[in-house]
Structure formats: structure tokens, C-alpha cells
Image (cartoon, rainbow, N blue to C red; front, side, top):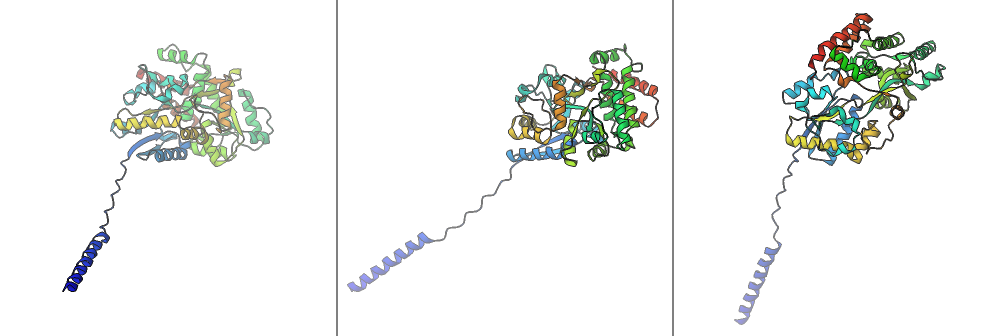
Length: 431
């Protein structure tokens, strides 16, 4: 009987251990996978006015997005004929404008003041050259960050000059005409003339007529108060004569040749000179790397003052005052990153080939055109860009009138009269 009881107890013990073991080795229920919440991204819309660096700007934005995964950047690149600002005004007025865009300063900044965020407290201001901030300073506040410094004149192909037997570069109008004849004699087209976009005529070329006045600001003030006239000004007549020279010794179909076509003509060696600025360096590098090029002044007569380039800040990055507080904060952060981070500064000089308007950015690998601009700048041989002081709208009318002149729809005297009419009409917008 005892033996039976012991056997029973052993069986109970084994059963108990068995049940206990089953409890400890049972398969656990798999934990449900945690749902990956998608990162909420804030989208910054940027209007880039530089077609020359469209790809490079997108590459820089991608670097920023990688560093800031909660930010998405969408870029609209405009320029040339597309950059007339009418679409920008329409977008902003409807509440769909970009968070970051550009402004040329002075009168244009005042015109857009209701859409410009105050940037006076931004870290980059302490690094900017003070003179570069002046066009965006009013009401004791700063409303824009300098894009860069740019210079323009005639860019020339040194190899084609050498091929034509030209030893010294022209620094007067007489010398320029002689060089054009020598190039033409060697079977080389002297000028690539792309006058499809009116800004090249009404802004850059005609600015020479203003910049070569004895006192450009005083001359502009006199135009505004009616004590000076364009119609009888010799410097304007000389500037039109320079236009005539480019047409006489230039490529065919200037009014149907746009910006890209003109740069391509020069980059592929089909013309020896082009009226442009150092901003075309990235385009030239893509088409014909390592071109042997440099700058010539835009000589309008035989005065020694011709030996100068126009150097200025062409545009300013601004933040849309009408956008949301969150977007304004992130837009300011992005602008500061562009000119203070290692990556941003590298893009500015190595990829964009910009001449920085900031003391904290070292100038390396910016190309021969920028080096020439810096050399002229350091030598003090520079002219001002005066168009920020023009009444709003007059630049476009200048350009359209000059296109009519190229088309032979206006005589030189009629062109001068059109300039004066445009100024008289536009100055009523001044405040």
C-alpha cells in the first residue's frame, strides 16, 4: 500500500514539474511592430534668380535637407526673360508666394516693404561688408542678405585674341574698334550679341551711361527734379555708339539670341567677346572647362576712366513677411547656414563661383572672371551699378526702347527721347 502511495506521489510530483516547465517554456506572443510615424516636414519655397547655378543650388538644398530632415526645400529658378517679377507679385498677393525670394534694394525694397521681414537681428550681419547692406537698409532696419558681389564688362577669349595676333587688350573705344576689325579679319566674330532679354540693354549696358556721369547720384537727382535731361547728354550718346559697335561687329540675329544661346556662342569659340559678368563662370565651366578668359572694360569713348568694371551686389535674399512664423524662423536659419556653415560657404565659392559679400568666407576656386573682378576692385577701378536708384519700371522701358532701336524702329535721337519720356513717367512713383 505504501508503495502504491509513493508511486502516486512521484507521479504527482512529475506532473507538477511538468506543468511548471510548460509554464516557463511557453511561446510568447510576438509584440506588435511599432508604427513608424512619418516625419512631419516643413516645406520652404525658394525663388532662385540665378539660372547659372540652378543645379548647384538644388545640390546645396539637398545637403541642407540631409542635415535638417524635418525641412523640405522646393526651388523655383527664374531668370532672363522670365524674371520680370510680375508672377512673384501675383503669387504673394494671393498668399501663395515663396518663403525666400530676392530684391534689388533701394526703391525696389521700398516698393516691396510690406512683404519684407526685418532681418536686423540675424547673425550673418556682423560678417557682411557694411557697404553691401546699404541698399536694403531703411527705417533703421535691414531687410535683405547680400547674394554676392558681381562685376561685369566684356569677357574675352584670350586664345582667340592670340589667334588673331592681338597682343594688348583694348581699354578705349578706338582700341576696341581696332580689335574688332582685327578679329573679323582673322575670320573670328568679335561679339556674341544676345539682346533677346531687355535687361542686358536697359540695365547693364545703359547703366554705363549713368555710371560714367561726373556724380551719378547727383545726376539721378537732377533727372528727378527736372534740371537734367537725357536727350542732350553726351555720355548717353556715347553709350548708344558702343551698342552700334557691338551690332556692327556682332553675331547675327541679336534680338532672337537669348541668354543661353549667347553664352553658348562664346563658350564654344564662335565669338571672341561677350557682354556679361562673372556670374556666367559656372555655365562656361560646364560647356568649355578651363577656358582662357578675362575681363575688358566697356569703353564708350577714349577717356582713361573707361578702364573700370561695374561691381555691386546684384540682389538680396529676403524673407516673405506674409508667411507663417514657423516658416520665417526656418527661412532665416537656412539663410544663415548658407553663409556660416562649412558646407554653405563651400557651395558659395567652389560651386556657385560667387565673390562673397561676407568677410568670413575665404575666396578660393572662384575662377578667372571673379579673380579679375577682385583685381579691379582692389585697384579701385570700379563703377557703380545705379539701377537700384532708378524709378520702378524705367529699366524695362529702357530695354524695350533699345530693342526697338536694334530693330531700326527708332533713330538715335528718338531713342534718347524715349529714355527721357520713360524717366519722366516713372519718377512719379518715387517716394
